[in-house]
Amino acid sequence: MRISILGTGSFASAIAQVLTDNNNEVLLWTNDVKQINEINSKHTNKMYYDNFRFTNLVRATDNLEELLEYSNIVFVVIPSKIISDVTKRMNKILKKLNKKIHIVNLSKGMDYKNMITISQIIEQNIDKNYIDAIYSMTGPTFAKEVIERKISKFTLATKYSNTKLIKSILENEYIIIEDSKDIIGIEVLSSIKNIIALAAGILDGLGYKENTHAILITSGIAEFQKIAPFFNMKLDTLLSVSGIGDLVLTASSKTSRNYLTGKKVGEGLDVNKSIETTKTVVEGVECAKVMYKFSRKHEIKLPITEAVYNIFYKDKSPKEEILKIFK
Image (cartoon, rainbow, N blue to C red; front, side, top):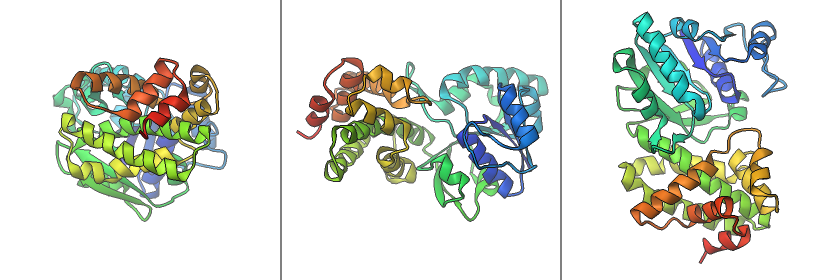
């Protein structure tokens, strides 16, 4: 089967490998002409992986219309900040092609201004006449380990139809997928866990160890529970790999970008410099601002969110703010 992927980053590359391991052909999309030439001529992606090669089943293009013509299944694996613009372009092309597609979102983040998730952005921007189904897939899955074919588990959620088609092209001996109908829930949690990861990194930078870290993770789960009713989140979502599973990984791994940013702050680096020196987008910083306002509006106490907000937006002492969580 032919599959289209929006993106050529670390996770897009990992998903491309999964799909080709399952004997699918893949077309990647990016605006980076240099990267396209590298993928098509050398079958490598040195920007993200030194010792990795795509198979001959993968190629890349900068032509969005070609990507949408190529397949009826499109994976979205691009930065959340450009999804709105890209999906608006997609809508015009799909109208021209008079074509319906399945859209599988793997991008994390939200439109924090309007408090809507990526699947909701896609629904707003692409006419329903051109959509067969929208899915979101999240979980405790670092791209590097997927590339290394380590066993990884995702939650695949949709409210449109069943997940059989998407599972059939992804599942294999190292990729496990569980079903969910709570698409909004898994997307919201995939954003909020980044706030806890920032706090965990700050703890590490301040010199605290496993005992304190365990308290923080437990407090993070409590914040999940407080937020859940406002998004009609199900208990199964909180307990899934996309809930507690993703939280534990992101807030514990020393390679998580939010964790690393927090660690720099805990070690004394200025918050702005900490963000600037992190190569990829630190979603937790923006999410903390919005969820802090959200907590005030709905009169709920979110100690971790408040601490991270005060550190990043009010220039408060990292140690003083983090220690308030445990009181």
